[in-house]
Image (cartoon, rainbow, N blue to C red):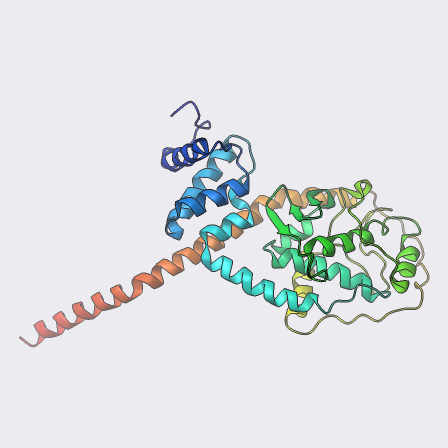
Length: 332
């Protein structure tokens, strides 16, 4: 083990890790921690079969994990770099999502509320964020600039598209942030109803006061936050509900919401558990590694299927020759 090896890096990873370190050193780039953009550039420079690239990423992830750093190979850009089939799926999904986004309402009460939320949901899911990870995402995990949306420290990076504001991730997330900034306020429901009705709700960045709140939230038919969330808190959508909403939009059966001239009267106040949201957030954080591992297993399964498909003609040919020889011997 060299002095630059992370502690306890298994021998099977050292060759690939040292190759990556050498490449980074030659270009004066950091190897540990390395950003997803560095790993994606490395894969583009070295090329190789999907299995080879996957092995390189596995070694880089292991080196980072053992050293206590985030695994850059989990970023969507890296996954697509070593998995062409995944990249093709994402491209097809993105085209379908763009078609839906063009028709979602931005104004009106409550159509503008759900239109903005579903646009954010579809944008993040279409870019590669799984539904369990999407609903566990907190506002503090999204950074918005005029040129990009960065999710979870670079695990997902969405460039702006200023020529198409209805499809632009920056504009879509800012339009949704303008909603989530008002929802926790005591008069937020009334303010949203008024501003969405009159088309005066301007895009904004996420309010730091609500940093721990979920990005994608649940509402009832009247636009009120649902779930047993604490006062001022927001209840996240369940992953199953998020998937159902996305599926409905992409299948041409978009959920129908009717506009109301004014907010419905507030319901009777309930005695709510103030620790509900915190417990839910902790539980989602604990299950996240399992969900990430499941995604990796699915990618690995796809790679194995592709390998078997490639070998199948040779196997079939060999079995045919063997059967022919046995048949010949039986007649001699």
